[in-house]
Length: 303
Ligand code: CP
Ligand code: NVA
Image 1 (cartoon, protein in one colour):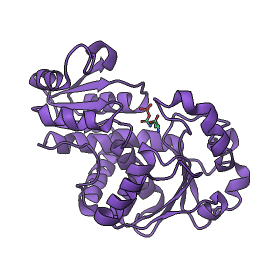
Image 2 (image 1 turned 90 degrees about the horizontal axis):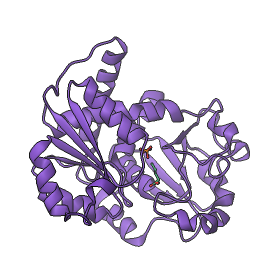
Image 3 (image 1 turned 120 degrees about the vertical axis):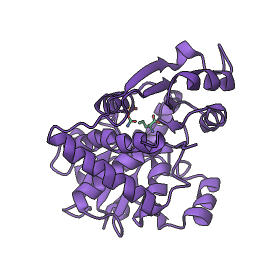
Image 4 (image 1 turned 60 degrees about the vertical axis):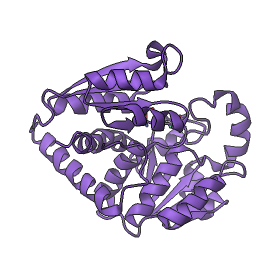
């Protein structure tokens, strides 16, 4: 079954093939072409956390491909509360052709996929956000033409987005630099897994100024992710020197682009000036979520 829970099993060629398919479809769409390759198919979305981009981009993408999407709020479904995860997975997958799941513990996605009769796509868990990484690589490829040899400097929390991006970059030969305060860097099991299985160029550089020097992309994300709201105040104390602002951008190459998975907490991890400045590509980046995911849906449903 074609589950997409993380990018660990994907190789660089497979990722590039998907990005090329996404770019072709995007070009076609701009010319007004829609091929109903998923006509008659139904995508189920079960989200335990809020979402704008992931939800709308999957729903719109599915509509463009001629299919339908059904959105289910995790609270209504009561994942593991009203009903057990295996029972929900086996029931929902009787109705739909693929499921996008957004949840807290990554183990929930794994468990859901284990029981589902249909492909499961991870629409964000506490540990991975692989759909985001696909859209981001598509964006980098669009702006730079190539991915191999490029450097992405992630200034902020070593979180779900950072992990998926580090894996994705490693797979396509791009260098990934994480600049985060102590206590918020990549966890040891992740680093060990990365060294054993990914063997990409991963570096941790404490000083954000040094980290952005020579970077093609300066990337950031919120300091407190969904589910970590209670830690927000404490976290912001540690992360303040890691704000992506005009001062930090002076240390980055002129050609560097600024990316953010969004939603942004403006004035915290990024200033308005940088977010809305000439180097920011955050909104075309958000747009590319849909194009990458359309290619992913075709792959998952083998269309
Ligand atoms: N970047 C992202 O996944 O956005 P949403 O949380 O709005 O889906
Ligand atoms: N790291 C963020 C990403 C949101 C798209 C979170 O998990 O809340």
